[in-house]
Length: 308
Image 1 (cartoon, helix red, strand yellow):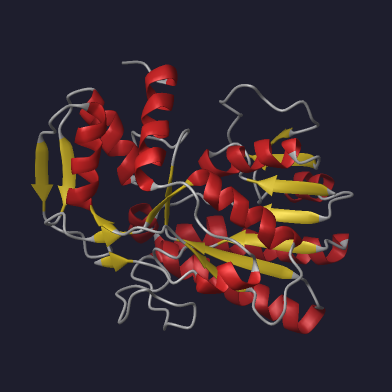
Image 2: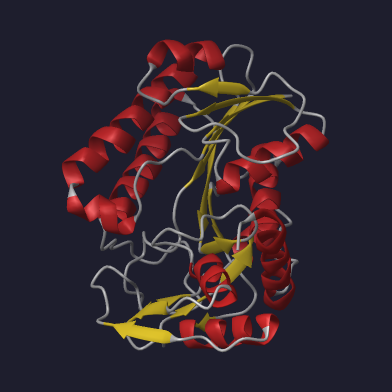
């Protein structure tokens, strides 16, 4: 089997690439950034570019069976600052990608959507895939739009696909300097005696889960015999508030955090707790890494790889 991983040098993509190679896949990567992590798999991996470069994309698709679409240029906050730019950078190239996949005879497209944003403020938790989708950010809107285009291409042209809606993955290689990824940011800043910013009261809750569990779901979504269901929530077994997450980080690191509370942001959902029973039933998937263990593994990676 041969896979193209779009965004394969990023946090999630690099873990996926590593596991694909270990599992015997041939892998091609298309990403704007170079691979930062060692050891790099010994394969015909690197192509530096993005989805807007059609000639690179079509070359990368040659002989590919499965496309993993993880490439995205915005996060929740930046997508709202310029929604038109978000659509031009992410939605339009994704539609062109689906057209090229059809022309290239791709067997399946696996798209990483967003369980943390497509539902918006939820009415029920755990939240099933059938819950109304009311995203509060451009990021969630464009992710959901790609889902709909995949469904359209599947219905009209027979393009096979699967869609994962992850809640909040974390783990080694996640950028601790960005505005997303509370687990990585908290671990990094507490370890260095830097103040931690929490937006709102800290009582918003999330079902954080470890990156290798997401990779497992991606591989299953690429190879499983699927029935009618094509959209799957992927999340953690435990739900914690940001305040509780910070408390666990303090215990793991043996340090007290200096916390700065800021006004809540309007695009942050109060609760993200996904119902993953469909993925368990259809994909045979379940989260395996407990939160405490995952935080310790992430802290160990930071201590060994990131400067103090």
